Image (cartoon, rainbow, N blue to C red; front, side, top):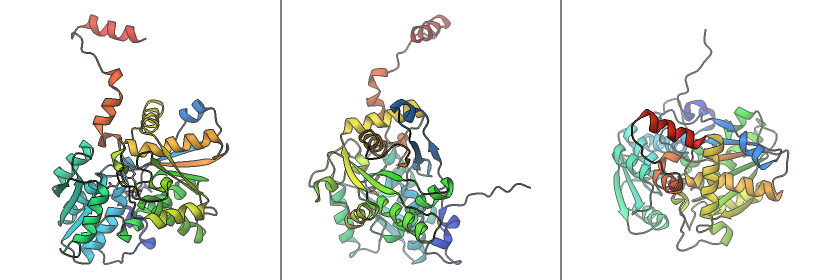
Length: 359
Ligand code: F0G
């Protein structure tokens, strides 16, 4: 008899550690259980003795880690009788909110910065049937409006200021420890609104407190240079980066993120768009893993800190790849413009020449 157990989502898997009861109607798309993939070629390429694993969150049902938080937030919203949810978003939260609202049979309103979310995310949000409200303003402005509107309309906020979002997202840390059998030495991830670093730290702390693992990782939070309030030490006014997912100047989980940094002995660092895109391409071309630009900040940061010795050889490192590369095809195609495919005659001869020219 097979011992295989069908994965029915992270609430089912970790229900002992989540605020649900036996009667709770679970709103799930079987999110979580994402692969932890060890990199082989990149460590060899950089000539360092390090174990780097990527937690590929782009393989969640809507293509990002947001599904972890959204299954919890929407489950609780429905349990509390809510008929509508609302969020501000740089694209991934809105896609996840829209999908889980559709699954639950409730309404989703999403505020997005006009022209500043990636095409794939817009396509998803449209298809899932959310009410899209585009604003002439960035994520921070949208977030401020969402916080105000909740007092004026019967809508549940499902941004990461909703504590159920953090609870759902902490399960990624559980999965990593469950897969490895231990906690990594370093955990590297991109930081935007700072909900995810808050959630991972909560998850690792919980497992360590309950002795599921004996150590906790150093938390390394990486930002885009044009959107790096944690490096500035204060919120910034006009964040700008090609990694639109993390185009955020006023992170809501400010204090929690600083606590994660201090308690874990970690740090923040920032990287240019060029460095982020280079890491994204490296991961695709050397490992066959296609993440979105914001996600690649985690690898850009890890490689930088390994090179400097901030992360010593012998370390076990996990990088979270927060979203799927297919979310942002425009940035990918633009980046590969030099390799733009040529069109040839549809003849055996022409195809043969095209191949032999490349070998
Ligand atoms: N990576 C991706 C792909 C994201 O979409 C986000 C956040 C982050 C990293 C940063 O995570 O905010 O928890 O620090 N996206 C939000 C959104 C803001 O609206 O989709 P964070």
